[in-house]
Image (cartoon, rainbow, N blue to C red):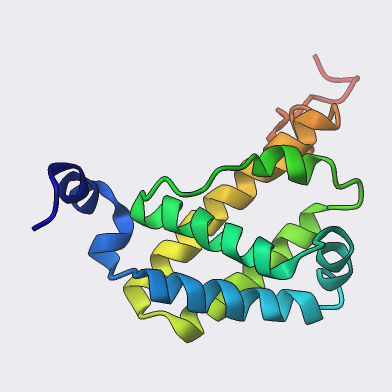
Length: 153
């Protein structure tokens, strides 16, 4: 019989309603990062900074378990890590999201894939905003209000 905390988590965690399981998270994370490692745009960045892929994949499984199932297993600071990468650009995030969507749709049932994709888009936007702030580019160009030309009153 589940504890009160476990039952509450089941009611609140978005992944339970979408059918997300730990096995599904493992399959998604491992399949996705196998693609990332081979990708011509993303592979060089990840392969340069990830020293131990087994450890990194376990950490990413913990991350997605925490995001979708509210397990609280992830302990880390993804913003700080990503902000330290000088060559990461919006095009890298777009590619990451494209590959993630493809992989989620290939390995997950539709409702779970939709949840993973929605969460990934929020996470990517948050990381990009944090990186822009870290680089002193705040607000990022796409969020700055349009300014009238100097000749306009």
